[in-house]
Image 1 (cartoon, helix red, strand yellow):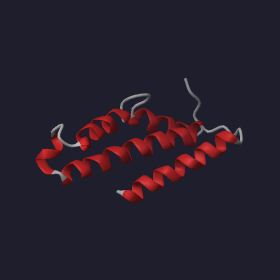
Image 2: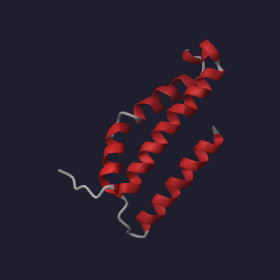
Image 3: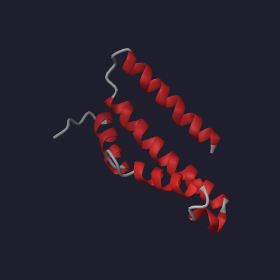
Image 4: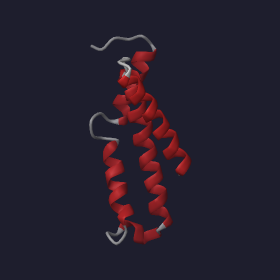
Length: 96
């Protein structure tokens, strides 16, 4: 789990550095949104699983983290939309 978090963080730092340099980052931003959203749900699901049935209760913060992570896959562009943006950019398609 820590490895996945660090990998997403490294990509975020790279994208932020490119923003600071004024480089267009729409492709990289979509890649980051996709990978970080998917990773956060996987990692929090695993954390919830570690707690067993009690992980679904409000007794543990992991329940709220999992709900928040799930929302990131939907909010501000679903993972499916991010994949479409990524594939369109890589294939040289323009937005319609």
